[in-house]
Length: 441
Image (tube, rainbow, N blue to C red; front, side, top):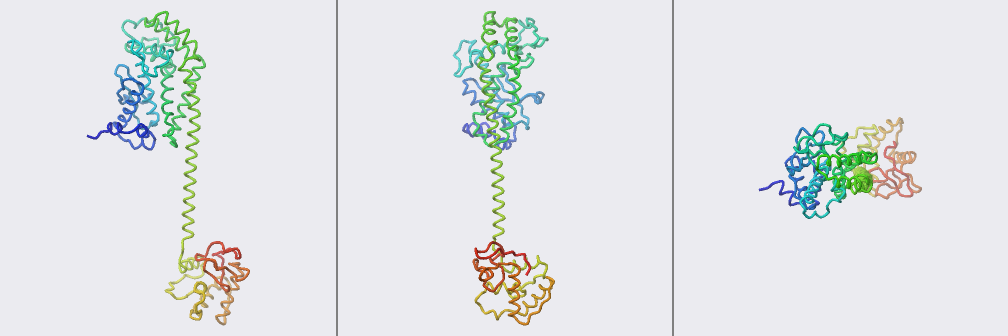
């Protein structure tokens, strides 16, 4: 039986992650399919970290406006905000972020149980603070809190992490800084898969803003005070010995710049900024290339249409109507206009011109002359044609040092008009001028 889970399970790592490109993610309409996609990412990430995978579930709708996701130690679940307007890279980041919380919990549990640590375990200082932040309220320690200003004055509910959820700014918790750093690096690790996706740029921009807020609080001492109060609160509630309390304050809290979590955060902050400008430039370059290609295709299409061979009758009809001289009638093979006469004489050069209907040509010539504001009469065929040639030269059409126009494209001869190619457009040879199809006779 087909299922979305099986579909994603069979995909390679690269194929799986490509589902998060904005154009691909938009094609996944079903929330159950999205959940299964996120579940497969979590399964592979958990295997890589050496921990049991969490079950991915939709976040309770009442938390959707202020939360991307949440990890539950008791249920071993990752709840994810399934709103359709969330950036797909935020969805991927959320799985990695909450998965890192699960890894922190797994490391703490291994330490407490005396089990071997998983490969790539957290550094001691980070693990110490993650353990302190994971202490939760019980019936025995409910009324033993210090009530420090950095903690909630009202006693947290039983089962809540009193050093995490009750802090003034939970983002200053070491476990939170570590999770943010881990998730951002995991997303950027596959940067080549996100190439040219503006949604990835938007994701990086949001990370820059968040890092900036974190950085200010790390620098102004908020994180140090949060850590110190967490250690003291755990001691007051009986969850830390006095020896361990002072060891952590001396070797972790007051050496904030040497803390692995802080050093990693600072390095990642710089990496995110560099990656943002690289990805943004990449997107802009691809957009510019696409516009250039579109413009080139448009020009090619226009050029193709311009250079498309046009029948002599079609062209002359179009030119005649454009000039407003006469409404060109159907010729049906008979020369009916002066321009038809000249074009036919040029195209059929070498044939017996006496067969042409000169009277019709002369009649149409008079109509053209009238349209030009001139009145002329011609005694015979020779004088009419001579006048045509002379007026063609006066208008500068196709004049040549020898013949008045070239025969480069098989059109024209030494005593004809200024047309120099089959369509009436284009440049002549080096010895002739530029034809202008709209120049009146």
